[in-house]
Length: 153
Image 1 (cartoon, helix red, strand yellow):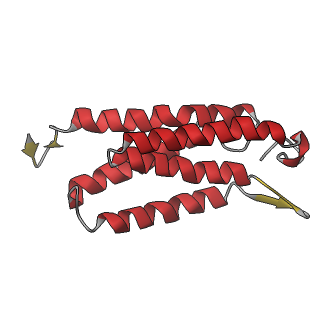
Image 2 (cartoon, rainbow, N blue to C red; image 1 turned 90 degrees about the vertical axis):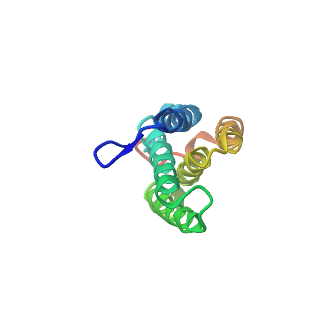
């Protein structure tokens, strides 16, 4: 149903499912970062995924599902998420901290974008791989290398 007052309501369920999946796929990553006392965590990662998913879903509704303009949407999404991730990187003397968090923010944005475009499998695999890398490979890294003074990274 389309009207100037209410917009397109026929796709509400589809939109809500996509945003819920983007949120759910990124919760394990958010939990890992939060429990590792990182600067970004349970709020940041799901918000990035939801915003990315919402941005893509909105672009699909405005431009059309197979519009060539979708390439510009992806370019803008990557630029914006990269900017946010850049804020998570901290340099202290000769060491740099937060690169895993920044990379995870970028990945979370891509998860949201993939789910927004309807590629649930890609979003799920990216989220799962991100989580597994943080958990499994994080155990191989010495504890003090990923955390600057004060416990932030």
